[in-house]
Amino acid sequence: MKILIFGASGMVGRGVLRECLIAADVANVTVIGRAPLAQTHPKLRQIVHSDLFDLGAVEAQLQGMDACFFCLGVSSGGMTEAAYTRLTYDLTLSAAATLVRLNPDCVFTYVSGAGTDTTAQGRTMWARVKGRTENDLQKLPFRDVYLFRPGVIQPLHGIVSKTPSYRVLYAVLKPLLPLARALFPEAVLTTEDMGRAMLAVARRGAGRAVLEARDIAKLALPAR
Image 1: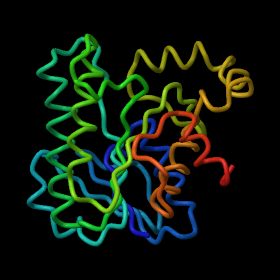
Image 2: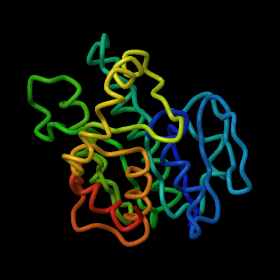
Image 3: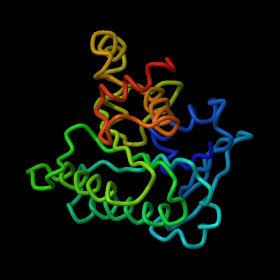
């Protein structure tokens, strides 16, 4: 497979990239971002592009993809709804519209979040915006669209969150996460689980478009 990853510098994206690079059936992985990763690998190709809202200049490098894993996202903390919408809804749909034109047979996987509001009418701002994003992604004519809704994610293999408040939270919870994962294996995911489950839907699909934490855990299970 040929895989494209948005957001490979983030916590989830780094975990997904790792699983793609070690997967025997992944021929190459293209990552696109505003800055280069401090990583090299025979399978890895990097596209450094300053404006992810306009992919016109790099379209030729985005063709021929079997799957796109869209792991790009920001925390809504301290943001207005307009600012969060631009970086969550507008950016995602802009990139997806370009990709579906270039790769209509591609599987598109989007990292959403537990509690997303697909009515887009609820009181929680981030959930409304994510819900609208999910709804409109499903209207695009990709081969398949999958919407991942993880809750708690345990970072592995030295991966850390780019968000300072999340780094503090993970540091506090680090001793408890393995126990929580043992007690509630379908509630606490890992960065490995996210990558393996995304590869699973790219390979063989899934029974539903919206995948909650328990669904993600089950998809990742054969590879554990």
